[in-house]
Image (tube, rainbow, N blue to C red; front, top):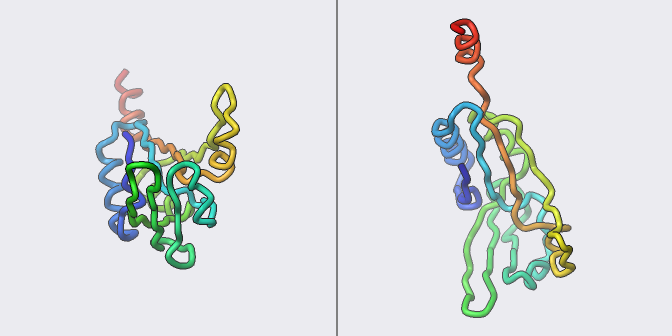
Length: 147
């Protein structure tokens, strides 16, 4: 299962509710992939302009703080409000929802390398995170006992 809406969830309680719903829909051992705004994105609004967007923080960086995502490439000139969530908050909420083995893999350069992506790879705007639903130990033990 994949989810892209985390930057648009208005508060922690709604984020937890969403995470619990996602977890409920997964089979035991299932995986969730999310794309929150990277907790360590570059604070310079112009840093990502060469990739067709700008990120502008509307206040000090903290959980739930507003970020303006400005799409600025030919044919598009759109501003979208997004919210920042820290890595610790995302980990805590997703663990509370029953997701374990949370990984935050580093983006790897393409093969062959493309130097135009270096800045993005050094400070990506999005963070790919993978999580696995905890397997239900009771059902596993029951299966073993019955076999």
